[in-house]
Length: 201
Image (cartoon, rainbow, N blue to C red; front, side, top):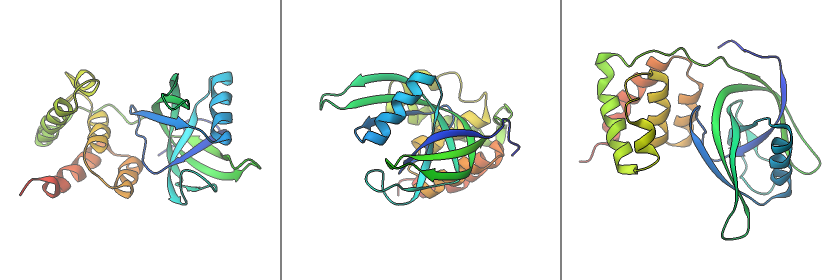
């Protein structure tokens, strides 16, 4: 996968789950390092990077992030019922981290190179079962899933694959593997092959 931009310096938010391009993320912000991250992004209009945690935890000592993550752009701020800051962010381009460092306050920073978006490819006929499964899962989830997926589930193999990764009960390592694949049809084929694992007995 070719890098599409020069190296960027961004704050990283290591999480126990994977953010996919086009996905939505809700976060509860309470640690000072992440309050600073939100302030920086709000002031500059820039994104932050979301990476799966390889070692460590979301809170406390700085965690070790995976080398491939997803840009996240904050779309909404709100004060939660518990008085903490809540944010909603949307997943953008994927990126590879070339170097990380930890600030004195524990915030992880990364030098990153973004990846070009995947080519838009229709879902091939032999994988149409996956679009049907996605639509059924979306109906069970209700809004906003039902609205977002209606009419789109056969138009873009990359989009369908990422949405299935969000809705199927994959473990974090599987999600990270799917994020790192650079062929949307291969991603769909691998999802098809593991579907029997989720079928009811």
